[in-house]
Length: 333
Image (cartoon, rainbow, N blue to C red):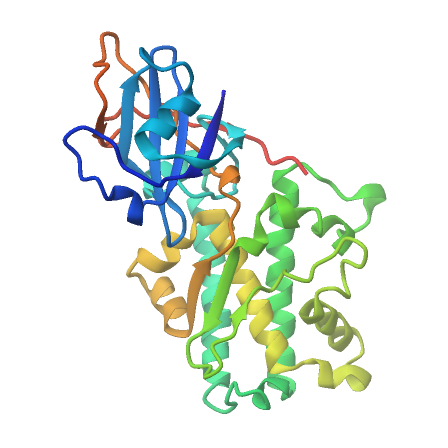
């Protein structure tokens, strides 16, 4: 069952505030055998507000499009990509707000998560120490040293570990006994929605938003990632490529690790939690999502009990326990 998504331009719900669409400007809807269901969504992070689930009996409407236009002033209506109630294993999308919901929807392995957090935390702490000595100005970002080279190699090695984890999850095995290459890794770019995330270094006066995978291309999957190409060059030929170990590329590679973590476990874990890992990340970086295709989001399937009211009203479907368990589909590349 496919849902639709759209922009809300009005709120027409009996006995409800009529300005809800101003903040909650995205809408998502589908139909059950007896009812129409609508969720609101808002920025930042395009969170789908399951606590604002609107529902109404289908009688009196010819189709769901007429209902969302009447109730929510729906514009720019599009069909969503994933079936209602389905998720992709290991790939976070908005609507997964509650941690226990994410755990079941993504099949999160807690020990794997802790291990990954430790690796990334170590990288960020090492970067923090570097920034005591190198100012991340336009000139400082071009500087290089044995310390930056060591950290670039360590960070890119962890990126490769994360890439490999996703490939194994998708059952994509290297051919003929060879190791994975960027020809394999590039298959993850669109499936993981890596370009949805933008990250800024807090103490950089220029406040440049870093999108480490923005230039990644299947036509040249190594060289199109400048930071990864620099890692390969300085790792294999330090003498001739020492200058490639720039602070700029170190930061890009660490941001790449943070993006991959956000994809796997949710950016909300980084932002909302108060543990040492989140504090370490938030001290140096701020995270956002921009220009996201809302058709790619997951929607929970709602249970409508027998004799459920046909009146139009708003309730919290998650807290009421009416969201069905997610059907977790495998990651397919």
